[in-house]
Length: 546
Image (tube, rainbow, N blue to C red):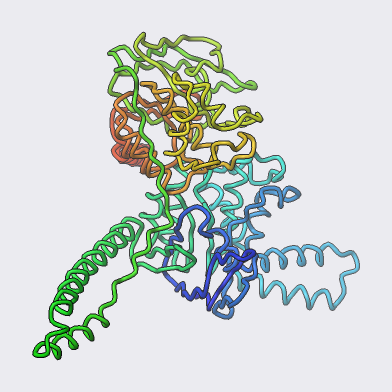
């Protein structure tokens, strides 16, 4: 168990948390939620001991081991992938290294023998002989092949480093597991694996995530941060949302009844307070009036942007024809003879672990890259807006947000453009910020503002939910569902894919693809059944061979 006792954290004069008391118990997975800036990551740092509170303390059951997801992707560059994972259990890793050092001594003494014996006993108690195989199992589950396990971390791509650090946090069955945005940069297969891991994990988990589907799958409780307090709710994210909305509704209804009663009492007192025969009743009602207290209903600190894609022109029947597109990058065939036709009702999710294939195709369709072979043709009624995965070059400018956005607007009026920024939570002087100083989430909201102001009837989005908070993801999800045009998109957010897409294209590692008209959940279910059939077929073949 881990608990916060009267925890207060002040940053300058502002109290981020004040007198927080909360217990996280064994066998539960807690989703820590709240608006951007509410302090979710900060609270995890307090729980993990990385940050000291201004007042109060954190208590952990004696003897329990706490593990958390490291955020420094360069910290372990001098170590192998496998060693980095095993370092998730520091004591076990230290024993392994001390043992190795003793056994490599040329002048092995009696004292060394005694010390080695002590270490071997502790090593065995910690199931150290299975450490490498356990670490390998985690890495394989997250999609890191065995041949990469002995690579140096410095040589691993950023997306794989994230997976290694996640495996490190999960390693060795920690008693308390703290995960800050564990699904960031994970492909949907890895997220699915992590969901199953956490569902079957018996100890305490506290997780921050903007993935609603993920929270619904793994969480038994929700810890909601709002106005410096943390309120616990039993159940997953959807249950929290319904419960919190119901609570506010009940409080409003109760207040309405109280207000009606107050009005009734005030009218009686006003009419009869000067009447001698009614004075006792008036006095009695005054006392009753004083006892009525309205419930304080504070509005949530959460803010939802308004995302509404409205095309200027209705799309025709001919949208997009792709024929035989092939592309090789750095000697690797990323796209191999890709062909498909897009209809005017299609909302296509591009899925699978081959992220480079998806991004390359989107760049080609947006006119930012040429294919090595093959062609594509947009219909004459189409207009496209593109949301790139890498926006570094876009924001490498000293232009103000409002001036940059005006370039893409038919109406060259600052007030008109500011209206779009206002919908995306850029209030007042925020529109005069320079593009290069924006945060990750602000950059995404600016790019979505551009897509809205361009009013295209085809949207191409490459991982638009990265860096967005839960409220913005919800708003984007609703905007894509309502959009009357065509959507081609890639997203790691299961709920966005499931609720938006009516067609799935999965890119395979060799650059080929599978194209199915279905929802994402139906696609996954059929894919799972196909794998089971394949395993059954292989087993039957083995029996025949025998």
